[in-house]
Image (cartoon, rainbow, N blue to C red; front, side):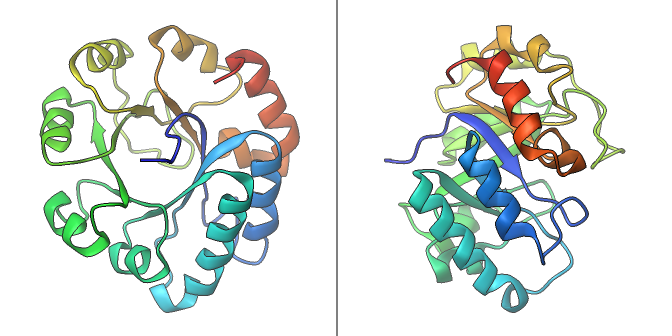
Length: 209
């Protein structure tokens, strides 16, 4: 798979990246260090966001980055997006694979479960995500998991590992020793619309990821 599943993984958000500014905000994130972008928006139909997702895919392609769409398998297949991300309340991995095809990236949220991650790996997932690592401003009800889960996952899995949940410049140094492949952030990238400043701080801590 040619896409690089490594580095800073920026996730959009209805409040922090509203639809009227999301394209310019994602462009700034890509210019300042994001290597993966996930479009996550729960309130609009596929038809409402299709053109915008095509723009975002084009931006990512131009930047040599990977574009993932959250929980919209049919849209991913239609616009040939790089990837799909699914969580516990979304469609099954096997169903998603049938819709998006063999060449599409599929990431699966595993929360704090190594067992779930192993099942996802066996089922053909291309990466798994663990979290929340810290209290998350965008998902305040998410359970916080022990960082040791990441170390265990690195030992027991062969596919790339993503970490998510409340990660930002103030705490990312706590995660670095566990060597996840991807650091997923919402407000850590887009918070305060200070994208350049946020990413500059994060990159200074992560170094060359």
